[in-house]
Image 1 (cartoon, helix red, strand yellow):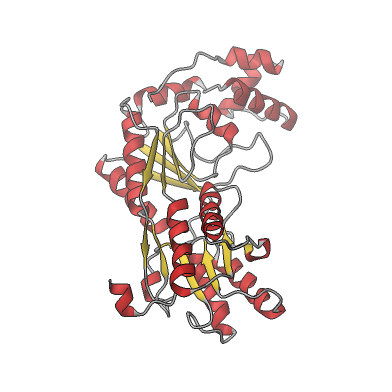
Image 2 (cartoon, helix red, strand yellow):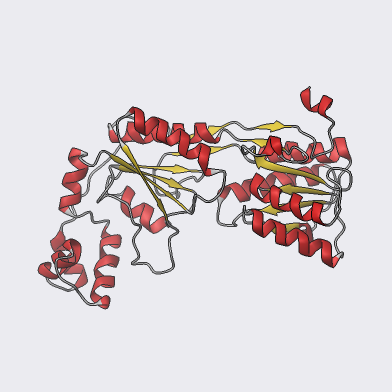
Length: 344
């Protein structure tokens, strides 16, 4: 997997947009305003033709920015601290700067992310922070990209780094069923558009099916990888008292913390009444009451590996298309295991 080039010119953009080259130039260089209709038409043609302005192309050729970009949904959860630590360690070693932007591709097709080819030498894209259309535009114009926790669209050759989700989830649900006899297990999933959510839900369903337990859609709830949302979901579930459950598998540790809080406020014992397990093994997980059984994901290594891949691309080196890092179960007390068992 290497970089390639594009020969689309500003004249091609003007021709397809049915406007003058001067108008396209004014829009690109922001030297004078153009109407909203014209701006949207130019932007769409640039996306359709995968056009990179010449000034940006020259910048890419010389790699003058000495800056790497990272686009994420937000950085408000504990998950991103080790990810950023891994990325920054590689960026610093290469004597580059790291520019972080929070962005989620909106419905409007002409909207552009705050960082890109104009101010970075390459970008790391977390999950679905950029639409397939934007990824296509950047990739086909030879801009170095690496995806994190997301595989590329089928038509694009963009390297990605992610973790093993399905097997680890299968194993932790197996543990709840086989060791603790939990059979009514809630799954607090994440955002539906994220691949991690899909694979973790598949592992959950596979484990239930392997043990002959029917999949109850009432037990699959939207936790959105958010402590606040998970807290409200479990609090409401307890108040309604319609759906019995004796375990919760949370798609990440932040949501597990929210679930733990709701259970404890309702005077439900963890793990006596309800087992709770998570995913990620965040920094707080060992210090919760009770300490959280979870899937340990090598988040710092994900960041480090993704950044190394990006620098390899910038230096025109071949890279592996997919890097899948292993995960492992970390047993603590929240599932029902005693400290002695957790130490084994």
